[in-house]
Amino acid sequence: MDPYKKMLENNRKWAADLKANHPGYFTDLASGQSPETLFIGCSDSRVPANSIIGLPPGDVFVHRNVGNLVHNADMNILSTVDFAVSHLKVRRIVVCGHTLCGGVKAAMEARDMGVLNPWLRQIRDVYRLHFDHLESIKDEDARFNRLIELNVQEQCVNILKYIAVQKAILQNPNFSVHGWVFDVRTGLIKDLEIDVGQILKEIGKIYALSGSFIGRI
Image (tube, rainbow, N blue to C red; front, side, top):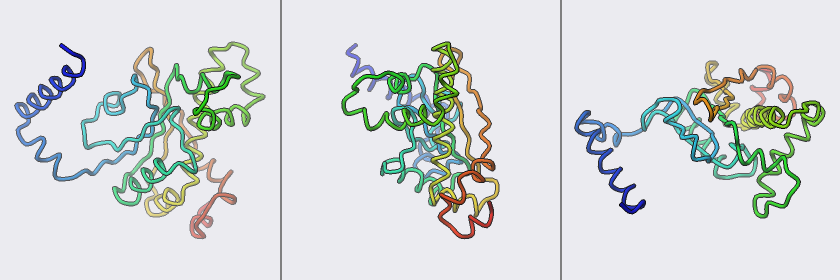
């Protein structure tokens, strides 16, 4: 069967199987969404958000881009985060990188990537911020893996700079931000155990946009 037609056939089978096993499934799905988690991941086809955390449609709000980046001037992710925390009232944000990330690998190489140059610059900036540490890692694969982790960490820092996230933290003391790395080779997730409290202490006086939030730091 033609690959395109195969996708449509797969969709029909998927929907039919769900309706057969859970008759009210799509009726419930159409009634609205109340996800507790915003998942910010990479566009890589090997990292499907719902699948790797075992959650069905409706349970996780998802944004994906090359390198799982949180750009301060990208209206796509800005609107996604604002909608998730201000309107859907998610309780947590997860930034998920992954091993063998092509975006991170490209940012480690000194070559012209065309239109990707300004996008990958943010990962190059992560390398610059942690230059001495990364250069001390002589094994190239180990350095690659460490940059993947540091990139996730820095994107969590960027998330905490958003006013919508700062307001969410003020309104809900249980609101949390997490950094993960999905291992493509094993299928397992590594929790980087991001210390949000420490990050807020380090960046708060510069990036806090709410007077009441500054008082919390």
